[in-house]
Amino acid sequence: MDEQRWIEQIRAGDMQSFSLLVAKYEKMAYTLAFRIMENREEAEEVVQDAFVKMYRALPGFQFGSKFSTWFYRIIYHTALSAHKSRRSFVRFEEAGATALTDDETDSALSLLEREDRKEMIARVLEKMPADNATLLTLYYLEECSVEDIHQITGLSLPNVKTKLFRARKQFYETIQRMMQKETTPIL
Image (cartoon, rainbow, N blue to C red; front, side):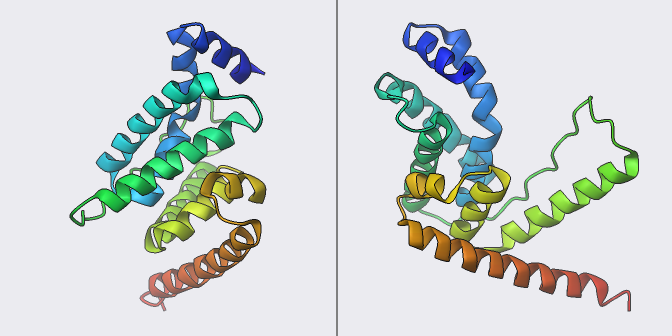
């Protein structure tokens, strides 16, 4: 696995391997931090802090769990700490749309539909409490298992399942309300 080789090389002082690890996880780290912080600049700071913490803790990583789960836990707890310690409420800033890669081969219509879905999902997640949005992001967007989420958040397995169930229900209700508001003027 590339990650294990990169980690071994980082431990030996290879900063190029660290750059590869950062490149692989920076988008996911930002997404998770943003779900908790609800602010771009603060999420970016959390991500930087999390990468520094990860780098410092890397010598102690034993490959007992997946690296991604271990790192998600660092991001999650760094963001929670930052969120708890911030003194003033910062107005929410909307995250920008994801840029398309050059190798997208789908038709323009399917790309537009996919971006519309992503935008709608992002808008719904923005309206939800940060903890619910974070769980849904981990489970559906980052494809973490319930066990991974348990390890990342420290919540019990039954609690993760219950919170995911409630978050899905809230997501569905929120998207229904949003769709109703958007279609009412048309009718």
